[in-house]
Length: 206
Ligand code: AMP
Image 1 (cartoon, rainbow, N blue to C red):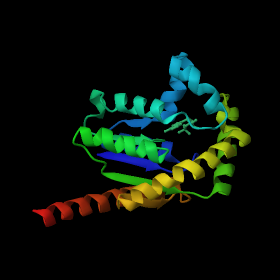
Image 2 (image 1 turned 90 degrees about the vertical axis):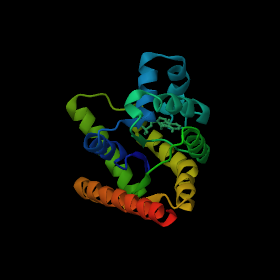
Image 3 (image 1 turned 30 degrees about the horizontal axis):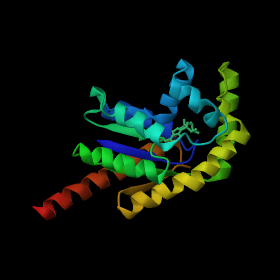
């Protein structure tokens, strides 16, 4: 199963991706995690990305597309993957479509977690406080100023990605404000609906 999880920062994509990864035994591919690892390792990509990420901006499309193109070629992604945090621009969505097309692959579903901005700000503050309570470092881009910038980037550049997939009838919206288990259940329902729709399309075409 090849799946894209869309939604603003703090919407719960990471939590839901981890659950899907465990259930379907396919890797969660988070460009944010990969970029943070590159920053930590001090690779050339990491060195370029750090300031952009700390300020809550978007890393250039070519960089993240390159990272994802390489990653989905790895053996563990052969049977499927969950993309978390990618694509974030229509250009990235188009690049993903070309990469998959060249491999005779397609996405099975695109799920959008819908959450309102005020709830997100409250969630992100809670996430920072929980990190502090655990003695962990707070992500540099989880401070309110950078978070607001990330939300702005989302509305300006990533919200059109939903329209891109909606136009292809691939998009399923799920209420991300619901309790975590309810969101997981709604995602499962959305995946079944997509599977049934794909099966009836195949049957209709046969
Ligand atoms: P995330 O962990 O998904 O919230 O990503 C953290 C940061 O990494 C974002 O605020 C961006 O600076 C950068 N980033 C992650 N994924 C992408 C992407 N697909 N395109 C551009 N920048 C990204």
